[in-house]
Image 1 (cartoon, helix red, strand yellow):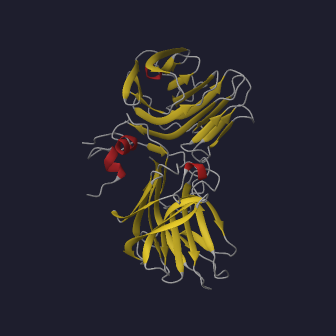
Image 2 (tube, rainbow over the protein chains, first blue to last red):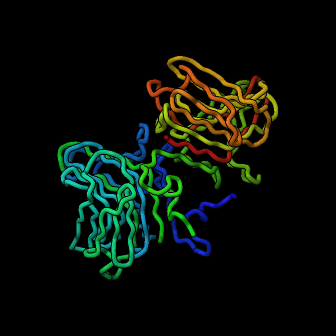
Image 3 (cartoon, chains in turn orange, purple):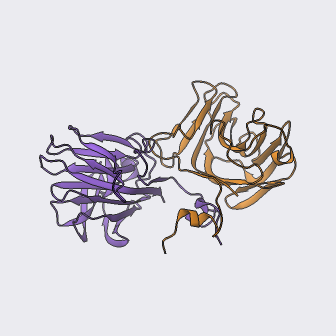
Length: 213
Length: 214
């Protein structure tokens, strides 16, 4: 029986919300979809010429360099009802980390929900923040340099973090959902590579899917 | 009731499996997606465009009439981004030759080395063509006669066996040193249209291409 992609991901009668599917594969990053936020000219966000290279977010060597891509202030995802699934890895480098998830636009992305893989932590973590207060919950998986599948589900009163099919963390406090700030807006996806040592940090992402739940 | 909420989970039976790199293009819309494909051409001035006025038309390339061996090719990495494993990858594509003489196409994964479906109006059957640029080229015939209709071509390689199917039916398996190898370089999506010794333009069309690492 022939089916549609729509039918695969939605139940009969559903009116689907917005969905984005990004394969990060081809000739060049689609800059009509993605905005590059690079702290300086030594940071890059380009496709990698390697097997499973995906998009490579690469910093320079200045402390706290950031190589990030996001949707340039396009906030289409409901804070209380959206999800993300991604495949990413962080290359071995001292003081490097990735943060992949959701951010709001107000103020200065202090309302966030994302998964962190950081050489300075012991484990992967689910990070949420409601303005000036944040909450970091350790996964059971040690930080590493392998590809994993991450998943984040934003619910009415909680944020769920998964790795490779297993629920690893649930944050119910210090989450963007618990506050209401005028003009805070909704979510956009972001992918961020940071380093805080004198070495280049690099993160590879080969898939990202974001949808309203 | 849906089984999974995401395309990822449908492709992978959940998300316990870490999916490898994948490339998808449906060749639909106003123009070719140049973030996916680079283009190059032998001397000449062939034309190429989304087939805007044909149902299921996809994307067409028409070779130059000024070059009797003109070729035009799309490379899903522009010749510089090679994300696919020469010893563990696959592709599936829907394409056709439109002109009915002196026309040929390859569709598959390539970058010097390649494995690809091979149509040539000067031959009897479709075939699997494969090349290791450190060794040489090989060809293995299918049982499907050359024609000018749409077909679904697919192939998968593990570096030892390269299996080719047309319209979902396995046709042949190639083996040996002329298969692509990691030592000979990684691969990118590839569709090439070319003229077989003719002074007239030749057209082929494509409407779907997908590749993935296994």
